[in-house]
Amino acid sequence: MMSSIIPGYTYDIFISYRQKDNKGDRWVSEFVEALKTELESTFKEETEINLFTEQSLYLSVLPQLILETYNALVEAGYSKEASYYESLHKVKTISDLIYRRGLYDSFNKVSSIAKIGGILQQPRLINDNFKKELRKILKEIQDGTFQKKVDEEKDSGYKTTQNFMNILNDSSIEELGRKLREKMFKNE
Image (cartoon, rainbow, N blue to C red; front, side):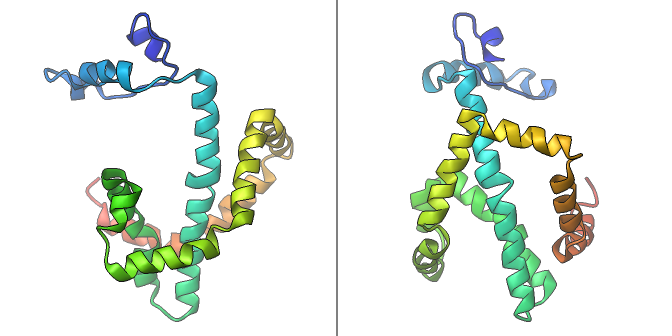
């Protein structure tokens, strides 16, 4: 908790690092000092933002987009391996580009056809209903509705969660992905 690291400041976020990473070069100390002037947050804000981004992007939309993109490619007759690479593996490349360059400049770092295609197709996928539901998810986190849903899922023995995980585990993309990851990351 930042408040225990920085006396006089009440940053309600967590920092995790391996102790050996900070030996001698003081990068963690410098990072913490920079946070004093760059970032201010409350526990409530950090918690709600974290829950929202995990539910609305990282563990809902993104995995489902990957899965449906892969399925659409395979159903259209493309090889599973090429479909895997383009729909799942390439996410890191694009994510790294956006992280390093920002949203605007990332469009200037891809091919012109990728840029134009992304711009033209985006409204078909991210429509008004999507935007409305996104805001509804945030409201449910803020008003406690989400917690009630979590409690109901727990009371059911996590049936919906387990069903989804079983379907995902048995999916073609995961079967292939396990084999490919074993080859790609065999030394890890």
